[in-house]
Image (tube, rainbow, N blue to C red):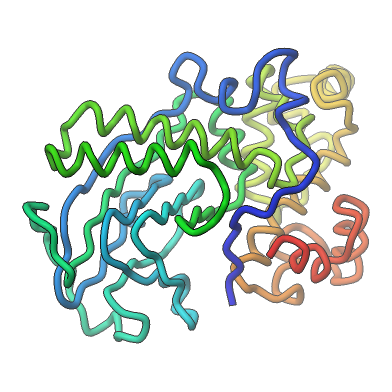
Length: 317
């Protein structure tokens, strides 16, 4: 079964490490580095399914009223979402929102949303949109974040986020218009606080984010995350950045404080974490992230994360 990353506060915060005076959200959103855009605002009735996966972009989904179920990889049980719940996909992959926990998705055709005109106890109102990383820095952060993040209305996570939801709901009730600029600004603010409030939850090595200051290194990190199974050698990495071996080693040490091989190990383990959260077994993961044996994967995972894969995943639930 897939593991959804929901709030579970830990002591470590990446806010303390990105720049001297700027937290993660400020770093990400400075100069409009990441923005939201509203795609759908409306109502579904009766039996329905919906997804933004085919558009190929990171997305967010806010349940304004009613309830729905999140279907990931056709796994059961589906995850119930209720009024006030907020779902972020920092990396795009296949999913559906559905009208019931057990309906066969193959039997459903996609429906057009209707306008939100009045309250209804038998419908689901959704606000869906896309998250747009506009710079290499925001692309790097999104590549390192868990694929899925859910904020439940019932969770004691962030009063600011819940307050923003109430403002959003008020604005939707006043004018359910996808082009409403106030709604757009509110979803930007929700993104800001999701990044800010959740920064202490992720096992992201903040030194890797410092590579955003060096565009060539940032592009390399994203390429490794996209292709972890490739047998990246020192020469391959230096060649990708158009640097000599000595220059590459010096630059990556300066940016991250890590050797190239340690950066490679950390990135492969981050990819494996998202695969583990999707419910994929270790036996099916190790070769997908560049390891020749399961034992080699276990050793690398423990070296990077400090625990075995199963123990780490349990601690994050």
